[in-house]
Amino acid sequence: MDESIDHLTSLGEHLISSILEYKSLDTIQLLIDSGAPVWYQSEDEGTSPLHAAAYVQDTALVKYLIQNGAIWNAVDHSNHTAGDIALSFNNAEIYTLIRDAGIRSELLLAILSNDDLTESSTLVLQANDDTAAGSSTAFLSSNLRFTKDVHGQDVCYVDAGGQEVGVMMGWERKIMQETVQRLCQDHQHARHLKVLNVGFGLGIIDGLFQALPSTAPALHVIIEPHPDVLKHMRDLGYYERPGVKVLEGKWQDFVDNDEILGVGGFDVVYTDTFSENYTDLRKFFETLPNLLAGPDSRFSFFNGLGATNPLFYDVYTHIAELHLAEVGLDLEWYDVDVAEEDGEKDRWGQSREYFTVPLYRLPIGKMSCVA
Image (cartoon, rainbow, N blue to C red; front, side, top):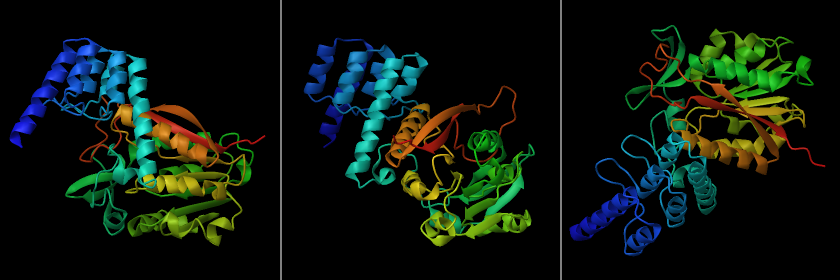
């Protein structure tokens, strides 16, 4: 057994070194045909054959490796993918090859696993995690802490396996401001909007809906399951606000009943939940034809899918667009610069970082126009 592992290791190291030495494609093909594993990653740096091909910027070799099972989302010891390397060289062709391989792989895995992307996917958007950060059951039974950090930023923390994780943090306000503007500006029903928001968090986006320059929504439905958040909403007076209706529970408890369907459709729908995975989000997508009032209605969600890596973020941005198209929504994307500026105070504090790409891709969806 050890001899077999040693043999594969030797072949894998030889394959990677041969690519980096820029040997011919024919030579690389012979190595792979002789058993060199395309999935191998070097022990010293975690370099894979696909990383190496991206380093030498060999488009034909990248195509060949992908066709022969190279792992598109392998990360080296510096947490870089082959796609990241292509980006660093501004090589759009190789980056697109790797990204599209990721999209195909994830969609195929979804089909093979009855649409359950998270449990089967090679891309770990959310690893198997039974803490409050990865389990809705654990999250809803956890205690939340609403506070201001040392920089005066509003934060809501949850303990996840001994580490405080931000459920929502004040730095997201810029994203929420742009989201509300895109959802509500020039809306045909601006003076009597019916708004549905799933997930209150710190209440940033709900506060912005309430402060719309035209007028507060005629109906503002908020679905929220966590008891500590519900208490926070009471403390902020949301239960007494005109036009506001708080539904205490998970969105799955309400989307098919008269409390939601009896509204006759919403002009604006937004969702930003915590500890749910992409499978849950896709199921929410499938409810949108029943939730939106018509072609003038608009939808958005907090797009944090795979947002700790540019390649992963790009792949899941495209996948979300494809899945929304399946339910009849067209998406427009708007970039929001959320990079920390030089000299800016650390916004993360002790929280696990959940969004590290510099541009937030803001999705705005509308029902497709059918001729």
